[in-house]
Length: 317
Image (spheres, rainbow, N blue to C red):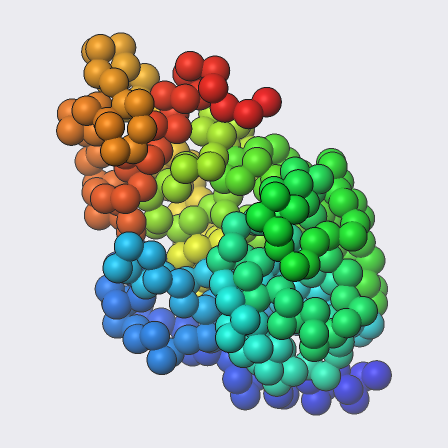
């Protein structure tokens, strides 16, 4: 088994994506073009800590291309994936690339976000590894059932599940609602890596169209209070060092809090926001530096409308 792990490690090193130069790192964006990258540069991945990989493939939304991220955990007794990708083609690419990293089969897929760009590729993964087990919250399973998704979770986590695979401890945690209402995070206590999924969309204007704004803030704070070195986002680049990713989670929290405070200020001033398309409040909003964040034009009015719904008590319980 030791020889097998050495071979897998060598294969992984051969295919790890290079880190970006410090100049590119200074660009605070999730848009691949603004980081000097092209669609042909994806998918790509890199090793965060030994046997744990951040995997990025491209996602185009509103004319901008960013990344959707997955976590790949290689153990001596199989692979665990957290979140998939957008479509079958990307799923087939992910299968091929995991096989470049390790000959181990995928044992588990943890659905941390139930949105299509994180689950659309799952049928291709299931075809490659028919015995793999899918795990989600009950809320995400209900959402995916309503969407008539082909692959649903067979195991559910309401609060916490401790998973041990090949000597690797994996904690699947429901810290609270945020982006989807069925959000999970995955924590590796031995390496202090936490995959945040869409609770942390690095330098993306907070996408709240299906979110729970105030609960989202509380959920991020719970994650920040844990003993974590590496916070890995669900969108936005993953190839920074641990202190930078941690600091940018703090920036994302501030952005989320700013959306909420602006909505409260605008509503107190008598401005309305019934829907993202009927939102006079957006014209008077002060977004400051967040106007430079990826997807700002689309997400800002959606976020305002969602906070107004929360203040009106209209969000699902």
